[in-house]
Image (cartoon, rainbow, N blue to C red; front, side, top):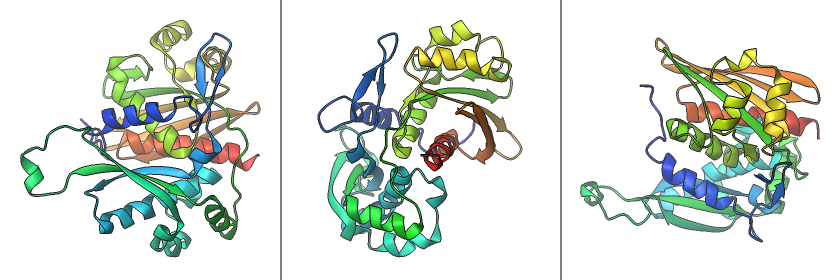
Length: 288
């Protein structure tokens, strides 16, 4: 089986992300789609918030977490995935603590008792960080990009995965693909994009379990996504390479009637999802 860098924490992380999109006054709002399904939208304040996992609650690891979250927020606010890993961010990341408006910790193990290893290393925590909006906007201006604060469309995401002879499409309500579904939700939250995942009934309806996604008319997939609240169709095919030990991912975004295609590779499907959804966000943001 391929390595998955965060498979151990995905269930807890998925719950955190799902809780984060509940419609409260301080959280993303929702809209009703044609069939009554609810599609989560992204509140502007949430764009300036990021979360990472740190070991313990000491200052040294907290500073590292601040730097990581700062990069995530800059990418999320702008939609510019190209900023990830940009060396120009180094001086800002080293001073990230000065840009923090507030932060909080949540036990990554959800209150479970300490295990035998807790005597040799610190417990892990989710570190949530809120950054000063004006400061983030100033950094983006220095990078030559602008905040993407207009409404973001809901991506209807269909992901096909091939691993040896096994082929499947990720469904929101399938236990077979719960890890992949959680990873897609996590990637969407990280990149600030609202998404819709098809359910098993939708996949049966379009024939996705009987034929590859590439053989299904994009219009048919888009219509099925729209019935569940998806506004822009994003499809992907991930294939595992046993020799390179990597996922190769082919993505397609149907935007303004013109398909945008790109290919990437990643060691984990989690990273492939982050890159793919981030790539879609970058394409849409560039045309705002």
